[in-house]
Image 1 (spheres, rainbow over the protein chains, first blue to last red):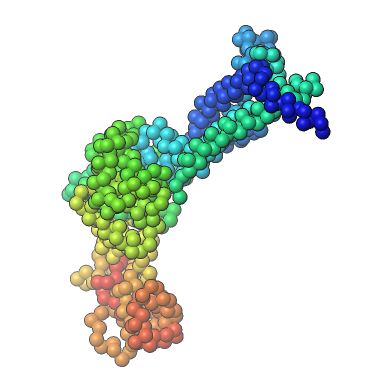
Image 2 (tube, rainbow over the protein chains, first blue to last red; image 1 turned 60 degrees about the horizontal axis):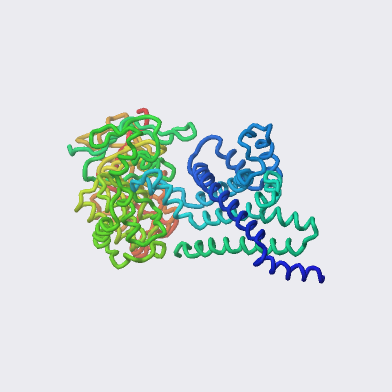
Amino acid sequence: MQWIWEGIQQAFQLLFKDAEVLQITLLSLRISGSATLLSLFIGMPLGTFLALKKFPTREFWISLINTGMALPPVVVGLVVSLLLWRSGPLGNLQLMYTTGAIVIAQIVIAAPVVTGLTVSALQQLDPKLQYQLLGLGASKLQMVWILWKEARLPLLAALMAGFGSVISEVGASMMVGGNLRYETRVLTTAIVLETNKGQFGKAIALSIILLVLAFLVNMVLTSVQQRNLPSK
Amino acid sequence: MSETILDIKNLKIFRNQSLVLTIDELGIKKGELLAVIGPNGAGKSSMIMALSGLLPFDQGEIFFEGQLVHPKDFFEYRRKIGMVLQNPLLLDDSVEDNIAVGLRFRGESKKESNQKAKLWMERLGISHLTKRKARQLSGGEAQRVSLARALVLKPKLLFLDEPFGALDAPTRARLIEDFIELQKQEAITTIFVTHDQNEALWMGDRVAVIMEGKLRQIGHPDEVFNSPIDADVASFVGTETIIPGKVVAVQDGLASVQVDGYSLEVVGDVHPGQKVFICLRPEHLTLWLDSSLGQSSARNFLRGTIKQITPQGVLDRVTLDCGFYLVGLITRSSTRDMGLEVGMNVTASFKSSSAHLVVRGGE
C-alpha cells in the first residue's frame, strides 16, 4: 500500500513541476479537442440528414452508424494504420506517427458517436415540427437551425460523449501515433508507458490529470446544457 | 361566381404505392372558410400537406392566384401561406419570439417583428403573456399563440389542421368565436380540416366531405348536412336513418317511396321505378304517444317498438323498430314526460321535406 500512497504524492509534485506532463496534457487537449470539433462538423450534418431525410436505405445507414458508435479503438487504429502506412493508399501523405494521424483516428471514433446521438436527438422532436416550421416560411437551413436549437440538450450530450470517447482512448493513439516523446505522446499512451516502466507515480499523476480534464470539460458543457434546459 | 385563389386539378397522392387522395377539381374562393370534414384516415391531412406545398404530390396541378405552382416554387409559395396544426408546436422561447419567428424567417429585424407580434397578441387577447415562456402556457393560450404566429404573416391562404381538437369545450368555443371574427375582418381565405361536424357547420362558408381519399361532396353546410350526395356521406354527416326503398310515384316533386310495407312521402328529384335511400337525420324524427297523434302536420307516420334508449349529452337517442330501424333524438325531459321505455309501442313521424332522397348506386 505504501507505494500507492507514494505514487499519489509524487503525482501531485509532478503535476506542477514536470514540464513534460504539461506538454502531454496540452497536446491531448489539442488533439482530442480538434477531433471532437471536426467530428461535430461531420456528425451533426450527417446525423441531421439521416434523421430528417427519408430514403430507402436509411435504416441500414442508421444501423451502421449505431454500430460505429461502439467501434473498438484498436480496430480503428489498425484500419487507419493500414491506410496511412508508407505503402498504404494514403501513405504519400506521410501522416503515420504524427498528431494528424491521431486526429484522423479519433475522428473515426467520435464521428459515429456524434452522428448517432444527433439522429436520436432530432428524432425525439415532434416530426410535425418540421412541417410547422416550413409552413411558417422557413427555408430548409432555417428549419434545421431551429431544430438544433430545440434539440440543444441532447446535442450537447452528443458533444460530451464524442469528447469522452476520444480523450480516453488509447489503442488507436498508440498505433497510429507511436507514442513518440514530445511529438505524439498523449495522456493515455503516456499512462500505459509509465505503468509498463513501473513509474507508478507518473502514471497516477497523468491519470489524475486525465480524469480532471474530462471532468472539467464535461462540467463546462453540463453547465451550458443545464442553463439551456427547456422550460417546463 | 367569386374569384378563386387556389385551384386544384386532378390531384393524386400515393403513399407506398396506394392512392391516398384524389381531387379531380376544387376551387377555393377568395375570403371563404372551407371546412374539410371526413373520418380518420380519409386523407384530410394529406390534402392540407399537399395544398400547403409540404407533401409532394404524384400527379395534378395547383394554381395559386391563377399561376401554376411548380414543386420548385414551393418555398416561395409557402411564404404566402400560414399554417396552424392541432399541436401548437411552440418553440422553447418567449411567446413574443414564437409569434415573431415566421417574420424573422423572412428577414425582418427583431424590433420590427416584435412590433407586429405585439399587435396580433392584442387582437388575440394574449398581450399579458408576451414575455412568458411558451411551454408554460395552457392549451388554449398555446393555440392562440399558434394562431397569432400564423396570422402575423398576413397569409393569403391559411391552413388549419384540427387546431381546436384538443381543447376543452368552453376554451374551444371562445377561440372559435374570436377566430371567426378575425377571419371575417381580414377576409383570410382559410382551409380548415376537422373531424368535428359541429365545428364545420359553425365555421364553414362551405363544407367539403372527404371519404376514402376522395372528395365526395362540397357545398353550403346546409346542403351537405341536409342533402348528402350518397349514403356514405349521409351516414358520416349524422344521418342515422338510411332506409332503402323504391319510388312508386312522383307528383309535384313529392315522391311516394315504397319501404317494407309502408308508403312514405318525401320531397325529391327522382323518377318512378328508381331505387333510393331515404335519409333522415335523428333530430327530424318526432315520437308520439297514440293519445296525442292528431296534433301533427307530418305526412309520414310509422308505428314501432322502442328497442333502445341511449343518453347522448342532454338528449336521448331512441332506436325504434318499425320493420327497419329509425333513430331519433329527443330531450331527456320529453323521455320522462312521455314515460318512454324499451319495449313500448309508439308512433314516429317526419315531414316529407325533412327527409332526403339519395338515388342508389348504379340506378
